[in-house]
Amino acid sequence: MRIGLLRHFKVNCPHKKMMTSGEFRQWSRKYEKAKVIKKKVEMYGIQWDICYVSDLPRAITTAKEVYSGNLKIDKLLREVDNAPFIHTERLKLPFEVWHICGRLAWYFKSKSQPETIEGTRRRINAFLDRIDWSKENILIVCHGFMIYNFQKELRKRGFKGEKLKIVKNGVLYQYVNEAIEEEKINENNNNLCG
Image 1: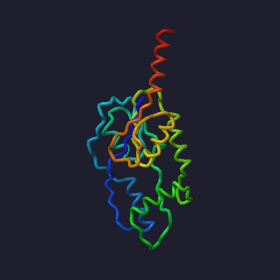
Image 2 (image 1 turned 135 degrees about the horizontal axis):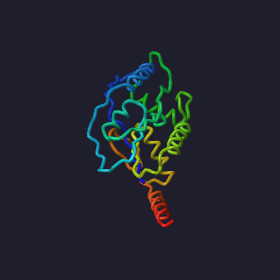
Image 3 (image 1 turned 30 degrees about the vertical axis):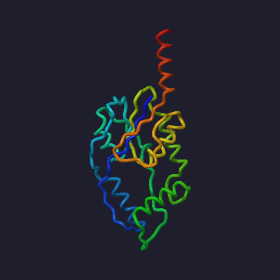
Image 4 (image 1 turned 90 degrees about the vertical axis):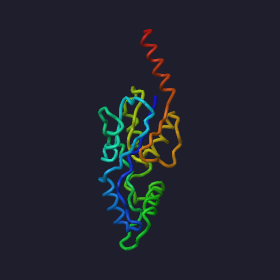
C-alpha cells in the first residue's frame, strides 16, 4: 500500500517584515483565502485510486490540478492553526518569529494555541482510522505542518518513507507499507482458493 502526501501549491500572500500580533492574525486570515501559484507536480506516473483533501481552498485547488477523479474533502486534514504566541498592541516582531514561536508554543502546549499537540495527533489518527484501506494508492493533499505530523503517525503504523523536517509546496512524498500489501495478496489468494 502506498500513501502520497502532497502539500498545496505556494500561496500568493505577501507579508510585512515586522508585525504586531494583530497584524499577524490578520495576515493569517488573508492567507486562508489567498490564491495559489500553480506549478507542475511530479506524480511519478502513479495511478492514485482515491484522493483525500483538506477543505481549505488552497488544498482543493492543488488537488484538482493533480487528480482527475472525485475528491474526498475532509476538514480533519486542515492545517494546524498558528496563533500569535503573545498579544502585542505596538510591539512589532519579524514575521518569522511569529511563525516559528507559534509552532514552538504548540509543541510546548501553550494555551495561546487553539489546538494541542495531542489534539493534532488525535485528528490525524481519526482520519487514518476512517479512510478506505482497500485502496492500493491513496493520495492526501493538505498542508505543511499537518504533513510533518502526518508522516510520524504513518511510520508508527508501519509505513516507510522520507523523514521530513521541511515540507515543500507542490512536492509529493511517498510512504509504503509492504505488510499491508502482503496481507491483501494473502486475502485474495484465500478468496480464490476458498
